[in-house]
Amino acid sequence: MIATRTPLGSLSVSPLSLGGNVFGWTADEAESFAVLDAYVAGGGNFIDTADAYSAWVPGNSGGESETVIGNWLASRGNRSDVVIATKVGAHPDLKGLSAGTIKSAVDASLARLRTDYIDLYYTHYDDESVEVAEILTALDDLVRAGKVREIAASNISAKRLEESLTFSAREGLARYVALQPHYNLVSRDTYEGDLADVAARHGVAAVPYYGLARGFLTGKYRPGTVVESARSEGAAKYLSTDRGLRVLESLDTVAAAHGAEIATIALAWLAARPTVAAPITSARTVAQLPALLAVGDIELTEAETTLLNDASA
Image (cartoon, rainbow, N blue to C red):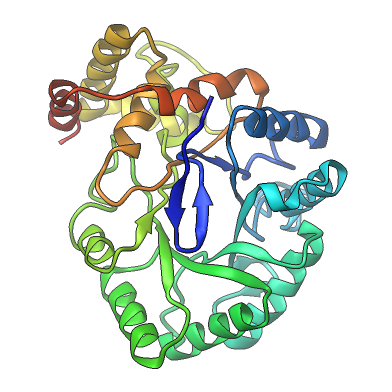
């Protein structure tokens, strides 16, 4: 059960964000509703999606996840109790970050989510063909119009993040309060270094995606095993690396010491990293949730942290 909350700009979020990429993909609406209900019942309030989810699925066009979440919000009447994050820039019909695209996309997301405001609005992928001035001015317009409460960036370089934050400060516009990087125990260089340094210097919170490395850090992928999953190919690649095997071994050791699931330990390590506010991870079934929600119950010792750090270096 998650009881704590972490500040994120003007928002207050649980230390675990529920990824919505599976909604309308590997989880149908009934399954998605059950997961969302269980997540909130377990103390979670931070739900992450994107207008592009899940356009990669044959027969889908993008927006399926937002639609499921919107239907759930409407049926439960709990909009003010949850923090909804979504993204702009990768929908097949609305790609890029021109001002016009941003303003069209937000209205489409609001309609699918069946709400009149988005709590946290990310640029899904940076669009370096557009000046940061145009992007930030368009996002600031959305904040001033009440359509968006806070803004954030995902998949952006350290240089462009610095430039964006400097522009917002100079012009007195809305600023990015969060950053969504690819970051986990087997992918540290995708965040640590220049990008993390910029975030730390400007007080930007990290909300990492792939917190469990497509399921690899749940421990279900082992040498000689076959896992039936939509993500199995992406997760299994880590088994072919020395680091992947070292990380699994260290996670086994720490999990045994705490009597905890391996996934819980992997998320606890991530949640305790500098600048991290809340890792994102998804659950296709309610049965997968307890190990994720238990992240708030684990406090790693210095020795355990060092063990995990060394294994993942």
